[in-house]
Amino acid sequence: MKDKPDTPNLELRQARAEPGPAANPAAVAANMPDCKRAEEKLRESEMLFRTIAENVGDLIAMLDTGGRRIYNNPSYRQIFGHEVLEAGSDSFSEIHPEDRDRIKGIFRKTVATGIGERAEFRFLLKDGSIRHIESEGNVVCDTSGEVSKVIVVSRDVTGRKRAEEALLESEQRFRAIFENAAIGIARVSLTGHIRQVNDVFCKIIGYSREEALSRQFSFQQITFPEDREISLARLKKLLDGESDSYTVEKRYIRKDGSIVWANISVSLLRDVAGKPLYFISAAQDITGRKLLEEQLRRLSNYDTLTDLPNRVLLGDRTHQALAAAKRDMTRMALMYVDLDEFKPINDTFGHNTGDLLLKEAAKRMQDCVRASDTVARIGGDEFAVLLPAIETGQDAMVVAEKIRQALCRPFELGGHSIRISSSIGIAVYPENGSEEKALLNNADAAMYCAKKCGCNTVKLFSAALRENGL
Image 1 (cartoon, rainbow, N blue to C red):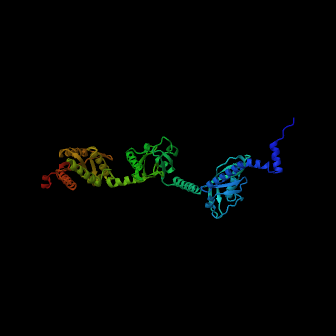
Image 2: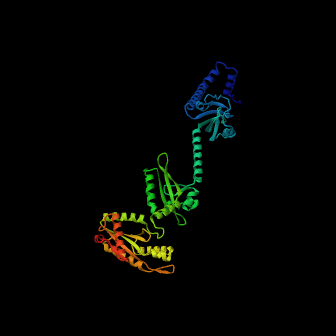
Image 3: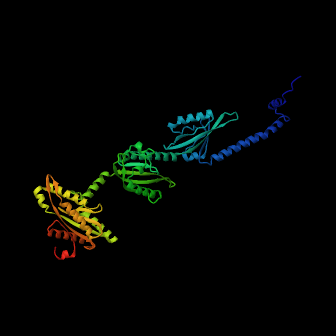
């Protein structure tokens, strides 16, 4: 039995050979709707592509598999201006020579694998300027599945790159300043833990960088106890937005237990939304200055020989005691103590022995008073004692008599047993004066009265004493 002829194929061959009116019109008519639909879909696809491509800010290019241009959207004009990117031209020509081979390699890999890869490179424009570009390729395949085109979507990231470069430059400058500054600098978390620190800061606080950056290290543990509450209060003001920074002189306890004074400037850094990020603390070691200030303070307020308060500090303490007595309606007393016949001791035993006697006399007087009282040296062999709180004038007499007896005991100095005595005058507030000058004058007058009465005695000022000219 003969096989039936392949009618459709025969008709198709006949139609191709002899396009007669009976066979070909039916075949063409049957195929026309599919062709039109395909053409319409292609047109719609191209219109959609161009509509999107020409109305977005991104750079969109269609390239053939060799990297030659098929299409560039209008966004390219924002970069290249009047330069014409002609169809069929090499799309790699405007890429910076240092980036060109790398981008060509990525493009070939995309065509070969069908998988796009994000890349950054530079456009080198004719005027010599550079634009930073970030792009990614997407392949388009034909009906056989072969890659026929590559659509590259790019973005101009020049602004971002410049910002990153500026930030990097800023960080490099900050790091250079941070590490080479003559003062200590630390970046501190909101919890008081160091996150970044330079060597100068480590030297100030007496800990290594590794120790300072450890989780266990906290500023609270090295801040001098008396300064902690002040520091916490100031930090709270920064966090509450009451101030942007503050400067304070504070003490730290170093690892070896020694105390270091530092001038600290603290600033709070916030993000763009105003949220606190961390503190920047700048520290300068001022221990030497504080020691010098303390020395100068002692020189201006203390006697260098006996280390007792001098006339200046006595005046300040008397002023404060008098104000407190007036406020609290209490009594206070001031006494003058003069060593009897001190000059012959200098003449007989020498000034060195005399100085030793003055120092020993100062210690004996201090042993006779309370910690709240003040013994001061106000002249060569003249001393004063301030009793800021007493019940009666008799209380002052008791203290004065105690001092007189202590000074009567022999002084064993340089192989010599030396005896002296003292004359002591007392003035009591408010009975003997309501102002500092009056009390001082009356205590001095009472002391001279004691000397006139034969020395080695104590006199309490009274009106009768002055009236009798004693």
